[in-house]
Length: 251
Image 1 (spheres, helix red, strand yellow):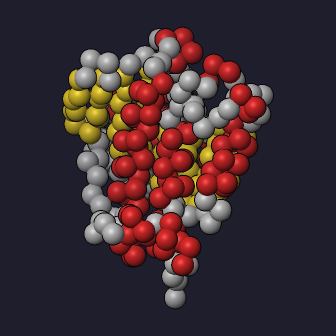
Image 2 (cartoon, helix red, strand yellow):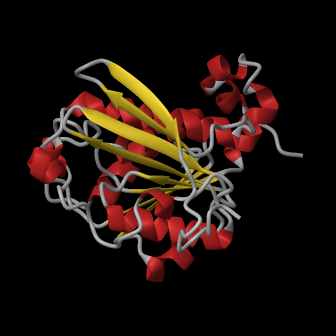
């Protein structure tokens, strides 16, 4: 029978007190595997919160190296990490914070070819990629395997997030964006971003991920929008497109 060590009971004592978690929930987290696509402004805080909560296996994929311009919002990195693969620097920091969990860093991009290996044994995928093409690939690959995923995006002073259920009853990402390729307007590199905005969206993704792994219901197919500068928050329920090339309207 699985159990927690004395060290783990001490580490997770505060969240074990929550009826939403308790001992059974902590064991569920320990048995879970999450893939995080991207180790940047969203991926850094997401993985830190998941590792801190005791998610047992975290796999991170990202093709990039740490750059000086990353540091204002990707605060897990330091100047000494510049030039190092992000997944290597990130997993090293996470391992130092929690040696009990499995951390897997994969240098590369998430695409259709890489999906089979990256999704092996995964319970949930979190998009932290800043790439529309990656999201389309995640949507296709997870739909084929009936896996849920959490999309997140942040640019300038605002961001959005949405949870897609395993069988896309409420529609899919292709219902929102159905053309391959990255956004015409560009991401953070072209438009800029205020650091805490990325953290704001990442915290919502992290909370949604923990709720799902603990068995709590999520508002599937609801696009949440937040502007941290204007202090504006709104949401809208996704409408599945009957002619969607992926989910066919959620049928």
